[in-house]
Length: 251
Ligand code: FPP
Image (tube, rainbow, N blue to C red; front, side, top):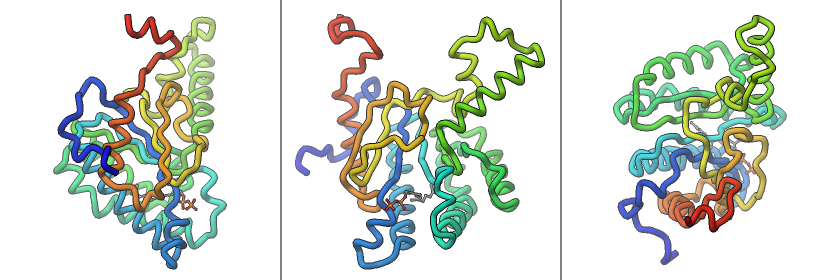
């Protein structure tokens, strides 16, 4: 643990990531390891979420994107699905005032049509309340999948071409990008996944095309503020080449 940074204060802003995406894995397993329940693990995971959001404000991150519920998670036991939905709704209800006072702009990405009316209304309300905030873009991915995101953008592009709003022969990467979730934010440059799993699991596939991938063996409930800073510190040591050679980058 000795080589972990003690705080964020020594970070050089230019070497820091602008956008971090997190796969918060291992909550259920941690709960069971504690001789308790998966639900206990999810509750503890929510405490980590709050710590990481506070840390993101401290390091002046532009965007933090959290994978809270995937399109595949509906197949989990009903009790667990209900609990996660209730937790997300309660978090939106309880934390919206704090988001505003901390200048945090909330955006929910994913297919919202499957949520309850109450949840849909709450999301809209908090997004509207915080839309003027500039301190941190907090993106919650709920009922989200990277392939879904790309497919929706492709469908929108096709609709726009049919309506002659765009000439399909001249379509460029940017035209698809403009129709993706988070189009106005910086691309993901650091992706963190906890619990010793080495997968991207259909998360922000398009947005993380050049992301550095950081894997931690810790389960999400035990991932601390210092661990978050350690991931950022690690990022700053990476040479980002974007397809060029190391020599080209140096020169
Ligand atoms: C992965 O599964 C994680 C989830 C399905 C959701 C995690 C959600 C939270 C921690 C709460 C988020 C709340 C807000 C407001 C963002 P798992 O950890 O259950 O996986 P495991 O079965 O591998 O342990």
